[in-house]
Length: 283
Image 1: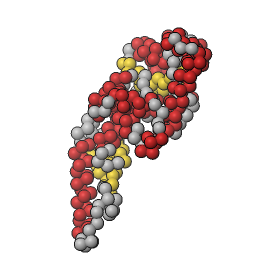
Image 2 (image 1 turned 30 degrees about the horizontal axis):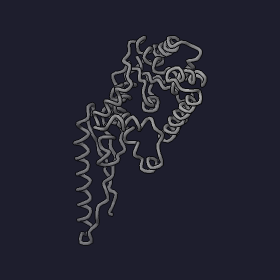
Image 3 (image 1 turned 180 degrees about the horizontal axis):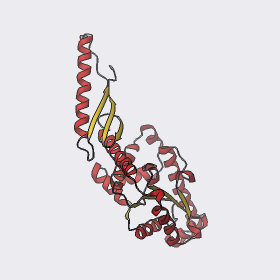
Image 4 (image 1 turned 90 degrees about the horizontal axis):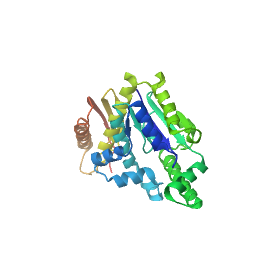
């Protein structure tokens, strides 16, 4: 059938719509589980992962790119999980972490400001002023996060397949509209679209598995992984002639290729690895 991602503004009943949609379709509903899977697989605290996709990036993170590795962990876990299809993902940035594949349906659930204010006031006992401040802070954080990492506007409707204003319908109505699209021929999984997801899952896992060793360019097609990487700069010694230097350089390249292959071949779904290693020259 399909993979459905449901994005929402804060306090817009997105979670309720996601759960109801999964129930109507008989799909698996996935949310926090992805953070847990990423936390366990990559040995990173769930709290760190949560902050990486919730809080707006500070100046230090923008300079050091410290947050990107956590996002890559979550993306790898999500892609690995959705390979089995028939999933409603209500989580952090699913519409951005998953590719524009044929059978990925990207939904945005919104609500009018007054409805959001009323919801928070009733749920948390806040004043109107406090509710507005919370909504504006949440919206700003999510907008900055999306702009920083993906250079897109979170509120741009063109990055979603459908935008639903929950004010004018019940949760059941909204869920039924999503189910109708998911059942349509347009979003049915094909062999090709399934392979695309599987290859992207492999690519993502390879990238995070190699991040400490090198910073590779990775492409995957039907389980065949092609990696382009560069060695670290080699310290040049004055006593080495050119032939010796070239021999040493080739040895370093060959050793890196072996290390890469040993790591990548252990990843589920990888059929073969081709390494294209270049030298970064001398320090």
